[in-house]
Structures are given as structure tokens and as C-alpha cells.
Length: 280
Ligand SMILES: CCCCC/C=C\CCCC/C=C/C(=O)SCCNC(=O)CCNC(=O)[C@H](O)C(C)(C)COP(=O)(O)OP(=O)(O)OC[C@H]1O[C@@H](n2cnc3c(N)ncnc32)[C@H](O)[C@@H]1OP(=O)(O)O
Image 1 (tube, protein in one colour):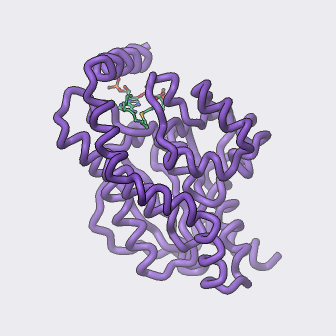
Image 2: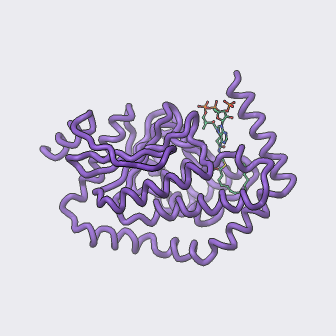
């Protein structure tokens, strides 16, 4: 009781310490009392994942791990979007080297989060399609605001999410639900996501979501950190091993797919539709 009250007090604006950070598109704030770090994605308007955001994300995860924080909460500075996934503008009309870099940094960011030994939670304060869902499901716990959307919608875009990218999704959903959702490219509403187990709790505000994530991380207070992290990594080891085996080939597969004229054409149309929609 005392512990959860303390977490609530601290989440509402108790003493906080900003860590020095060299990155620009992510920021890290460590709560002095709880030792929990909040990592915020800050690339308005929708936190689309360009190379810089992915590199900054890795750097912030590294910073949090080396500062021995007690846990990591991932959230967004954008008011209605957690992350819109990969930056399609960056993948459109570009060269193979850039595509190679984009995919390599996405892989690096995912493995840094998925394989982190720290307790991790996502305060999903907005929509989380595709790469946004990837980051949220790399965490161990998810708290989401009502009436937002989350899921892996790749097939809706005519593209295929590789196996490693589905790992987090498959960790939390029954195989049957995951297979259907992935083949349909389904985006779940928050309420549907809760019913299926894709998210763990709903919160009405970002502050409440942060509090609930902090309470999840606080639930490990009495657990030996080494025992906890080794147990977590045992659950994730098989996926990580499979990923390491194919990661180089996966980059080349992505480059080949994303450079295909019909895929580039599809991206152009998708971008145009997104822009038309945002002008309405
Ligand atoms: C797509 C082809 C990829 C080929 C590669 C092949 C295979 C590999 C597998 C790839 C695995 C991962 C893939 C991805 O992550 S692809 C990205 C998928 N993301 C989406 O489909 C989400 C698209 N965005 C939205 O649905 C909405 O923006 C929203 C997230 C629900 C937020 O809605 P709202 O708050 O209403 O914002 P707006 O729609 O008005 O957007 C504001 C501006 O942001 C631009 N935008 C949005 N999303 C993206 C994005 N992912 N990349 C780049 N830009 C994006 C949007 O156009 C608006 O721009 P404007 O203000 O200049 O008009």
C-alpha cells in the first residue's frame, strides 16, 4: 500500500532527476525515488521511426541500462500517437544503402528493447500500428489509453512482417488469434486489445498509464534482479537465437522487397492517402 502510494505520488510530479542525454529524438528521465526510467519518443507529429529515432532509442536504452535504473517505461511525447511505425517517407524513393541502414537500425532497436534485462513496460498513450506495436510488444507489460489502435497491419499495406518482428505479438496472443490478426492486418481497438491480452491494462490518462507501468515494475521489488532477468531471457532466448541466425539475410530480404517498383509504387499511394486524410 505504502509502496503503491509512493509510486503514485512520484508519478504525479514528485522529485525527478533528468539524466544527461546526448540524443534529441528520445529523452530519458529517472525518478529519484523509484529508480524507474521513463524513455520518451519525441518525434512529432507521429513518432514515425526514421534512422535517427531508432539510433536515439538504442542509445537511450543503453544509457538506462548502464545507469542501473530499476526498470524502463517507454512512452510518447505526441498527444495522440505512441508511434506510427517506420517512417514511410524515409523508405520511399531512396537508395539501397539507406534501406539497409533503416532495417539494420530497426533490428538493433528491437533487440535492444526485447533483449533488455530490465523490467520494461509501455505506456501506450496513442495509436501504435506496425513498428509502434513492435516496440510496445517488445516490452513486458502494456498499458493503453482508450479508443486508440494497436496491431501489425503490414498485410494491409501489401507487405510481410518477418518472424522476429512478430515475436512479441506471439508472446502475448494465442497462436490462433495472432495468425488471424496478422493475416488480416488487423488493428485492435484498445478495448479489443485488452480482451485478447495484447494489452494488460487500460488507463484514462498518460499519467495514469505511467503510474500503472511503474506499479508493474514495482512488483519486482522483492525479486532478485539477476534471477528475474535470467528468467526473462530464458523465455526470450529461442526468439533471439532464431533472429541472430537470420538477421543479415533479413536485411537483404527487406532491401530487395522495399526496392521493388510495385512496393515503391504502393508506398507512394499509401503516403498520398495519408496526406489526403490528414488534410481533411
Ligand atoms: C509501407 C511499405 C514498406 C515496405 C517494406 C517491406 C516490408 C517490411 C515489413 C515492414 C514492417 C514495418 C512496417 C512499418 O512500420 S510501415 C508503417 C506503417 N504505419 C502505418 O500504417 C500508420 C500510418 N499512419 C496512420 O495510420 C496515422 O498517421 C496514425 C498513426 C493513426 C495517426 O493519425 P493522426 O493522428 O490522424 O495523424 P495523421 O494521419 O494526420 O498524420 C500526421 C502526419 O504524419 C504523417 N505520417 C503518419 N504516419 C506516417 C508514417 N508511418 N511515416 C511517415 N509519415 C507518416 C502523415 O502523412 C501526416 O503528414 P502531413 O501532416 O505532412 O500530411
